[in-house]
Image: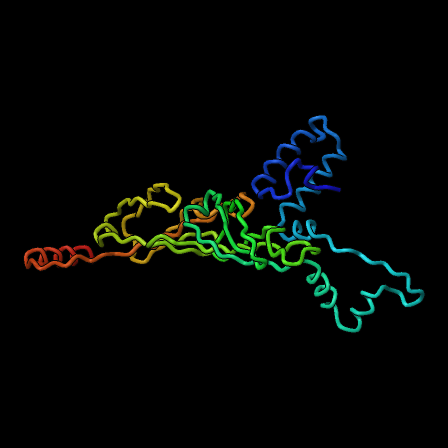
Length: 272
């Protein structure tokens, strides 16, 4: 079964192209819309495999299966060697049946993690050939994630399938922002008087959105507020993380004796 033909996409299709093709085909062939149920099952099977980088790599590089009838020995040569050398023997055998994977590192701005980004990669293969490739980095990618692109790795051994290209993502964080999984961490500093009386501040998110954060009166320094739905999208685009804002209090330096006296009197009045 050719999963690529079922979805009507080329073998080097990006994850975004796979998702769009699946949506189109599933709507066209859905049984509730008069489509064929068997075709609909094939479309879902194809998408289930191709949307997963590991499953896709295994599908693109199928390993030959050998079934030997060895009488009452009960298994093939792979079973014999597995018993002799451990289960890792089969895995090592499969790994030898294709060229090596290649690892690259690519840096994204944090803003690109919200929308994804199309990038052009250029790298030299171990065989000496220059490879150029357009890749779509999907939204929701996080620092340290690896994008697995099948069949764009080493091609040094002509009679073996190519290895994969593994693109490790590094995310450049804007000043004042940090990351924890899908959540964004930020700190703002306001006057201590604003904590007493309450105020509003505008949070300029890395996504490019301005968010009004209301700080209630009497807020204590180092209080953390949660703004839900403004963090990074997850890999399936079904939800988003939050922005956590820690509020710091800035104490003004007062040198005027009259003002200090007034502040002291106000303090005593408040604490009565």
